[in-house]
Image (cartoon, rainbow over all chains, first blue to last red; front, side):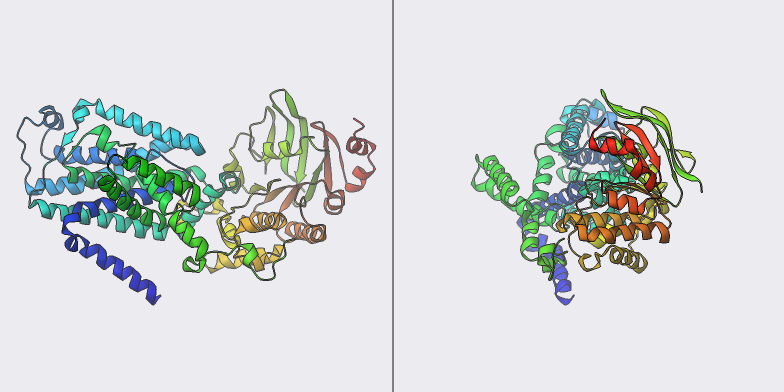
Length: 346
Length: 247
């Protein structure tokens, strides 16, 4: 217990002082937290429940747009604001800015939960790769729909008000917004996975047909899990919207081939179906990505592809899964039959 | 005695393959009822029809007087009519005890209960039932690493954990070490007598079913061929012919 407490305390302290001891990397550190959030939420369905979604980016993009619309609507008419294409002058008071930000985050989370239930109701009939492709289709369709919706700025996207104070202070604020969301999410999942709910979604992963035959409300659990995941992705999207100031639909909001895939890679790299896997994976992935994008420019996608292939082929359980196999006592895992003394299978 | 499961004139075909034609039978409450028949005679199809795994073409199926042939699998399971699988199905990545805990009857749970944890009462029950099937020593092992026979016993224990009113067992002794079969028969009978669970059992092992069942139905070519007490069935020439391939 003592060791574990020290470990967690050290993490919390590092989390609190990181943006001040690495002042140049504030936005990078914020992005690491974003990756942790999307990887952990992806793992809720992908790792814990066995539903590999390629469409979670839908909630990120939708969260961005909901937050932007809420923040603007507090002060101005949205159609007029986006219609001016940056030509008009719109001022936001400090109060309007922060009210818009926090209401926007909340609205984004809740709206995305509702969207997840609606999409889930349709797509959770699909299994395995069909679910992955189905949800990817939803994400692509959502991006295309929004990019043709002039009221929210169409293909040009939306520009949001700039942080009203010092630009550098703004970076610190966004770091802590992501860090707080990520921490709440981590603690929430740490608790959730120990409840009967966690056991039920694991049962769905291991054998959904058996779970049905045992009378588990499978659809209810699947919808609830995705709605919870979507809430946090929506909140993260809302924070991103304010952090980026301007975003457009296809490359930023509904970025299926970037963040939409990265979140899956993070979870696989770290170890899906574990609590720490997506966290470790997100950190490793972001470092890997930034290093290759800086020193291997031109070959960065090749390096990324190689990383994915190596992970999938040689480290099926990811980094944490690999450790679990070698150091099961670190994780207090159930042993395998062969390791038990005096075991003779009939 | 009253019928707990009533199957009336049920037919089911898959494309051109007729699996069940006009089958009518009833399972009396509190009994052990057997279902036998040569391979491919439609036994598992009938089980699947009863538990709602696929829609039936015609006929009706009543459970405790209630029509269930149009209900989905989970709803039927939550009514207290449970089945085990011929190809054993357990949650392979979880420990034995977790397999038991996830099998708690969801019909007695509200959605909010899902966010609670299992207390010592549930753990104790799980351990008692694992002891009952002889898997107590292996309760912390990953279920997927147990032998086939042990998985079969675990699946049976999971079914008991769910507190069903009626349990449909698809070949409970298939793949089980012959020396363990007597123990299993004893446990099935105790589940029936002590827990009051009505058992409806598909079985190929004649020694097992003849020892255990109160009443036996025999299917052949998707039709009900014969029914009666174990003694009647054993002496029924049509049943003997069906098994030896005279049809």
